[in-house]
Length: 255
Length: 254
Ligand SMILES: Nc1ncnc2c1ncn2[C@@H]1O[C@H](COP(=O)(O)OP(=O)(O)O)[C@@H](O)[C@H]1O
Ligand SMILES: [Mg+2]
Image 1: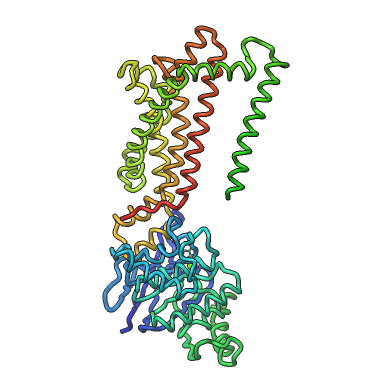
Image 2: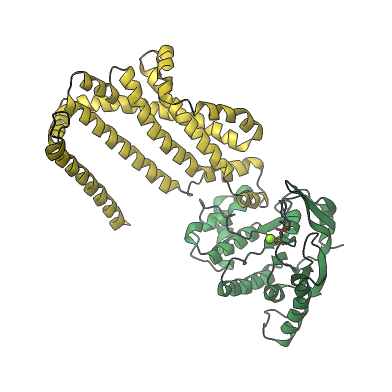
């Protein structure tokens, strides 16, 4: 059994307009240290899967295990990078945002500072630590979010379309940085995206989801290409085409 | 930064000069009545009242009541607002209260307040506190409710306890709302103090207005009105500065 296991996980939302089956019979096993990209069209249930693994929402069926123990709620062993940057604390500096998790654990100020500085450097923002989130660009805010999650040393990093709102160039830069950071830290990453190229550039495996209702895992494509990924290489093109074909059926309704 | 501050102050000065100029022109050419004096005699009268320390006494009397009542109202309102915003049962229990009392204006409470507390300081402080408390409760509770879901979730998956989420996330995120509520409450306090002093008081700017009307001292009325305007203007500036300084910068130490 893998490090993280989702076994037949389903989620049915009850709303005013009746019930909606967002996720059905979702099964996956993640190995320690892998970079797993979950790819799917908008509304197929990607965020719901991540929220259940993060412990923000309980599955209505199946079970989720981390190191063999069932997930019952959010915890410091699973770091989350959110899609927007509303999750940053506007009243704290970039450095204090990064050190927030350490502060919760009651670490002394000097130690917090040193660790936060180290992760500030890791995400390429050395010297910008005194700025508040309102003084940072969208890309910088996502870097801070990544640093904040990593500084807390989680077992797994959960990222929900972290670069989705960025312009293409900033996104490419951040993808490269994330790839480097992942290689440095050897963290297990679950990365959600609807961008095929992004998934192929970052992942060791790409999981393609069926569209909803009842979104579920349709296929898993291993990406056995060296890092850093060469996006114009034949190998990359081959993987891209394979994943593209899988996603294409979802977009154009080839059930 | 320095130049923009200078520009702001220059703007204030120019704005007030324009106001006085219009007042002057209106009084001299338009109204031409003893009941609407031009600015200059009013300023002279104000100077006289300041030299005799009379104006200061009235201002201090009114401002002390405002400040005391305002602080009591805020000290009561903030925790209640936080509790309403944080706990559903408290909200269900207390929200009807706030929704009920906020439609009974403080000026409507003057009579009952005088019956309960007499015409001394207590009745005025009670009225100001009353005028303050519900506004502060409502804006504080709204602030707690407006804390972004992702901010709380981020804290949860960094390992925060419920108490830590409250103290380190909900509270600082709510501070700008609290200050904004207090700013609105301060404006209410000015309305209330004048009404209360008009009805029952031995000193204060409201009492000064009342006496001036009795003795037809028209300049005194204008002095009191201008004092109120300036005091309100200045306290509101202080709040705006506080809100700007704390706008998302409040950082509790724990
Ligand atoms: N709290 C909720 N209540 C009802 N329906 C929801 C809720 N959250 C998500 N959904 C629905 O579940 C489906 C999957 O949503 P989501 O996981 O956010 O998709 P994705 O992240 O892949 O775009 C969507 O149809 C969405 O409308
Ligand atoms: Mg989503």
